[in-house]
Length: 177
Image 1 (cartoon, rainbow, N blue to C red):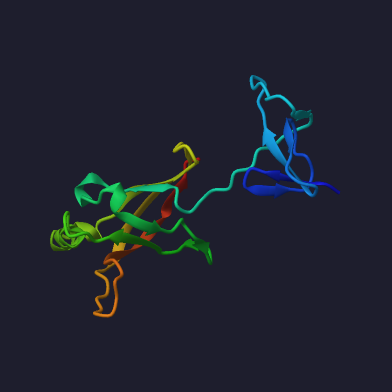
Image 2: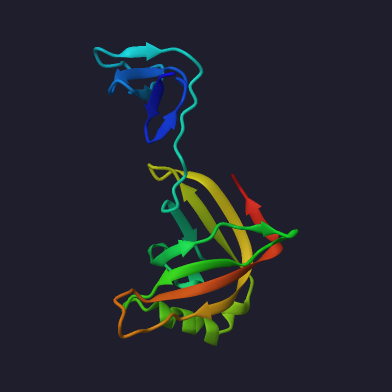
């Protein structure tokens, strides 16, 4: 059976309408088309019921904290999506970059001193597609239960990070879309 390479994935059968171009003896390149697309010369239109496939990527997300936290979106290094385990929502980890300026250490320390860090807050986790459109959005209400200011080592060139552990309220996790 002939295989078709579809964008970044491999499709065993022709998935639907699109352009089929010769790649080599084993594989062909399949490019999906819309009704208004005019294919280039020397291509074959493949009829059928096409279903485009683009996987979600871990590096396409935005995490928005309340403005009072003073955590810009570009300072977030990594975040976990919500996890349902044992009948309840599990704690989530968020890792922040800790640049010299603006200091995330100072921002987090101020939150600890004012005790705002113990208050429930709502933040928004958005998963993005390749062009930056929101394809999944979580509204999460919870509180920060731990703030680890990171490790230091003379034998390391790693960047400094701050790790937050957030415990969501059990009724405070909503998948908007």
